[in-house]
Amino acid sequence: MAELNRSDGAESGRVADGEDLPPLRPHAPLNVLHLPRLARRRGRDVVFGAFAFASSLVSIAIIAAIAGWAREPLAFPALGPTAFLIFDHPRAEAAAPRNAVLGHALAIAFGYGALAAFGLRHAPPAIGGGLTAPRIGAVAVSLGLTAGAMAFFRIPHPPAAATTLVVSLGLVTRPTGLVALMLGVVVLLVQGEVLDRLGGLGYPLWHPARHSRESGRPRPERQVSE
Image (cartoon, rainbow, N blue to C red; front, side, top):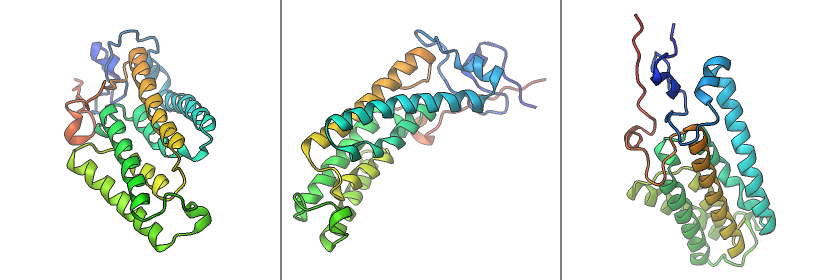
């Protein structure tokens, strides 16, 4: 059976069979949450499930408030996957601040550019106007450009695909809505950094963690018990 390492490495929350138990950076500046210790006592799924629940609840509530202020209720649903990446896979390449910021920024730019190219900037959204030929073209072009650019620049962030669709479908097109969407991204990143200081999530400041750039997940340490 796998046993939690009893040395300092145990504070990183890793188990003997190579499974990661975030947080992955045990010596956080504040480290007041003590998540690895709680995970050993209460169980990984319970502790980190509760952590992801609470973190996502707070972040989406703040983002929803921003969307309400901007009167753009559809500006924040696309950020749910970004929240999941940050709070459940903080060291994955796709969750890094660089990828999130640039991915969503490219998505907005290509989505809005596609609207302009197909003459849809002032057209009703697809919900009311239907999927016309120009709308289908805008959706296809915006998604293709977003995916291609993220692959070319090596900044994968899958949730950005939802963002460019939200824009090219005409659901969020006003400048205030687009600004609210990017503010939501910033809120998520700030919360990720704060939680890293409190609990050692291993969330990077900008670039992805070095060892996550190839695999998207940390390389686990294996402990051999005698």
